[in-house]
Length: 267
Image 1: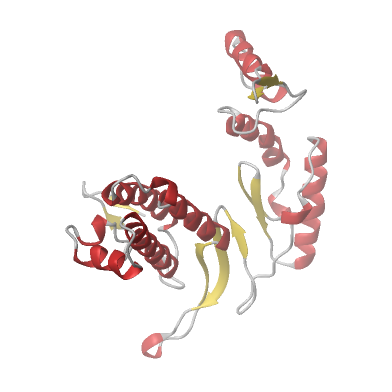
Image 2 (image 1 turned 180 degrees about the vertical axis):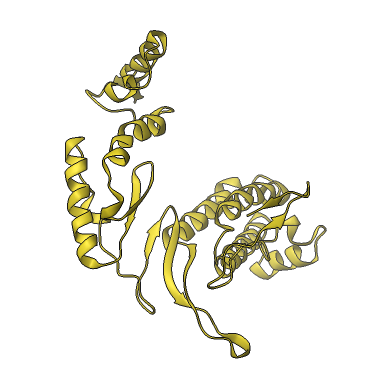
């Protein structure tokens, strides 16, 4: 609340925020109120997190590295390992002032190099790779990104849930619509970068799960499920295609501007 009061003096707004922070959560019919912080999953948690961690942004000096933060996830980009180690120490000091500390299991220094490892940030895996150098062109190193392993597993788990045995009473067309809704949202987030191969894997997994659902619903073989998928109308129950939707910059080239429907330029 002290951080909020640095910018807001409207007492009704401050009173409302205090009431929301003191509301607590109900578990098994019992209301539990924490002494500090916001309830996990509360509607104001993301906003209050950014308000609180804005002090970290203000205290950071770009000479320690370039800080990129989204809520409580952050990375610092540095030129050398010594700078990275100094940045980690500086980060620990600034967080300690706020009563926080980096999570040891998720905090590490990564050296981006050709053929080396990468790091996960906001669901994407980032890694330095070499372009293929087709038609005699020189191979160029660039930072590629695609859905991280954890994001891939989350997608499979969600599709498995949507096509699970407990939903066998629903028609396959309804299941396909639910899967489509998930795929559109998931692919809409991961469409940027070099994600085509992994998007293809998720769609193939969705096809397999739908075929399996049909076979279980009709108590027939898996081949029957594939037959219905491939020969029904609409084909594959109208499962959305994820091919050709990724937007990847060429290696060593800036993002190309494309005209949108209104004729304006965009990146």
